Length: 186
Length: 186
Image (cartoon, rainbow over all chains, first blue to last red; front, side, top):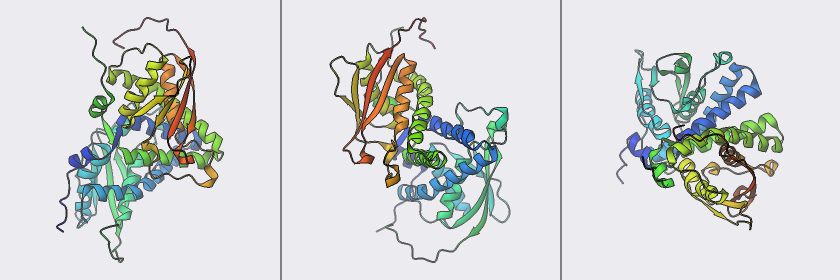
């Protein structure tokens, strides 16, 4: 059987089950507020959001591979393009851009101008160290780990902190060669 | 200007911004897991989920009224129909049915057969008292309170506990007459 062609983010997004973005935004806001109450330290909240995202990412990658028909990316560069153009569209309904590659092709920025997580959000003065969207970096880190790429992901720009966009810096730390046989039907 | 006709849940859902349902489901699962870890007591988690839902509901009602063009419902009965047919569709993409009205028209059941919150969820034995979807009852309670209906909402059936559907029992406790002038443009 000929392999299926990869689908555009728009095409995938049009066909997956969806829920109202405002409900998602408010639900996410409720998590962050809960964590701030329970953990008190902003730095702990950042860690916890990242960990929650990681746990989501290691599961979401299956949905991504199943629905997007994206086949194995040849390298980190192609992978980052797919995350920005297909992944963000498929899950959040927005498109991101990739830029600022280093010479080695092992780190780049993913830039988001529209981010449904932060609608209606304003950070109080006590939360200036909060990476409100840290769940996103966790999701990407978790998903990439499932395709054998160990990464470090940090926020470089954040509109909640007054920047003009959201910029995530992705750094490939290690690419583990896959040794087990890869089965298409799993 | 003639009032706009109310829109069907399908029509509204097609036009609101949406995110991927699986991302929402996994994010909600991450909240519940976090609460179970932090609060330990299942009964406390139920309360917290309800409270989070309530906080969401009191904000979500604005989006609902703005996007659905639903005008003031004449009574509790009509309100419950609108929640089931327009509200659930608009926010979760599923339809619910209303049944089991009592003679006074002050309590009824909202029944859900499809519930995106619980995809992939199985409750371990230690969580048998957990009302996993308690955020939903909180959202409805909060939203209704903003249109002056004080309600008590309980789970009667829950597929995670082996029932054949999700059934929420809504009981109208008090309907507060509105005394302030109602402005259409707010």
